[in-house]
Length: 620
Image (cartoon, rainbow, N blue to C red; front, side, top):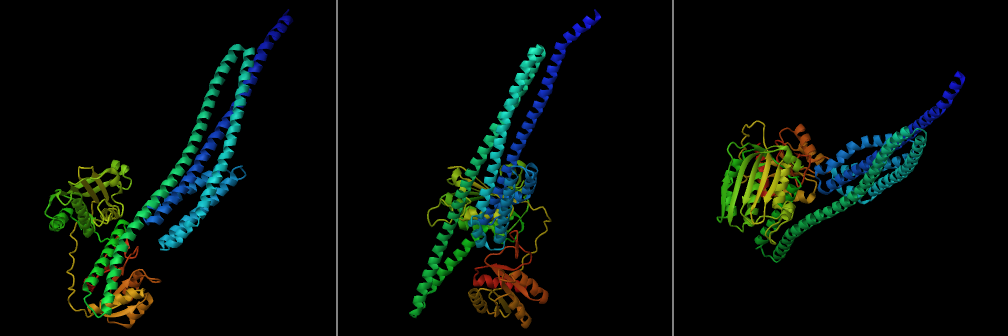
């Protein structure tokens, strides 16, 4: 009896044991399949992350190329910020790519191709920037035009596309495998329902819910990945087209304006010199009007060059502690003479105005330029208001204007009651040679010169205007927070009408410039000793103890003017030095500021300007 009972219990236990065995098998099989599914999901996420890393590599390479193009076009260091950021960020991304695509993987070869192309691209960018910085602009542009950089970028894109295709195929395979796993799990759940109904229902519900979530997540990830790839491609095309259009527009406007204005001035000079030559050849000497016309055209050409240097932030500045209230007050007579009696001038000067550190002559020029533009906008009749104030540009303003550094500023505003500007005109107002004035009424360089000076001084300029409501242009110059001790008063310039008796060593590598400058010095009464370079100049200094002053060009082959001056002062302490050049960078001007205690005269200069500068230097 007991034996039968035991046998019955064993038979009754068999279905239960079978059920538990089935459940155990289902649970074990489900665990294995779930781990496979998790591994597939992680692999999918890694593939997406890898594609994002590659997209970041491509974006950084494009940013570096954009920065290099902007710098080669304009010479402005700010354009190199994307390039410098890319150079700093690329090593970390390349290291991450090596981790994602280890040697021996199916994508390692493409990664090697990307790294090689990136290395070549970086070397090209660095070389062109180095050549540009050393003054070899033509060679730098030849490298750019050579197309090697484009081939490297095309190779980077091609390798990235190859990896995307490999990852896409892998994702598709994983998707199919996950669908198969999902089917197997459903079949197992129905089999469990036949054995243990309640357990089967629970298992099916849980499994179905989880698999639907995973499938939805996989679908969402796939959709986002496709959208990301499409957005990257669209953005690349749009940015490339926009950069090309903007570059060509800027270059075309700048070169066209320069060619137009310089050709007009050269036409006057050429015509005047030809007429003077013909009259002199006939024995006629009434050529004064032609000489004056040529000199006026040359002066206007020099002024145009100075304005272009101001716009490109390359002009040499001599900053001082400036009280804007005192400066504006001192300009009142000049402004009234310039603007005429029909323009009513009003000044609103803030009490307790902070000091700023800027070139006072350039601040005056900026105010005059703004006032003249305002007069023209009012058709020479209206009210002009010049206002000063202490201002704080906060972080929110700086965030909305990326070129602005938050902080305290001295504000000078010029407001007119003229016709105002539309938003389109305001967007172009600071571009060189852009003007709304009729032909022969303006060069389009006034506001661009103001813009360049303010930016070079670390400031900010902003236009507020509406059609029919007048215009306000605000200049923000950084507040000076150092010692406000009075600057040393400038010495009275030596009288240029006093006969010169000193001996001057003229150092100039261009023979024609040297000859004309020597003639000017002789006309002023100086004894002139000429040298074509630094070594010759040092030798003649040693041979002629009577040399009191050295007038030297800065940009010369071999030893430049700054190096020559340092060596001359070391060996001949009593010699005075005056530098001259048409353009200089990092010789006697650093960060746009003229070095302390440097006597400098910009080419071209008049006889009177040279006479005054030499007397100042000799009196020092």
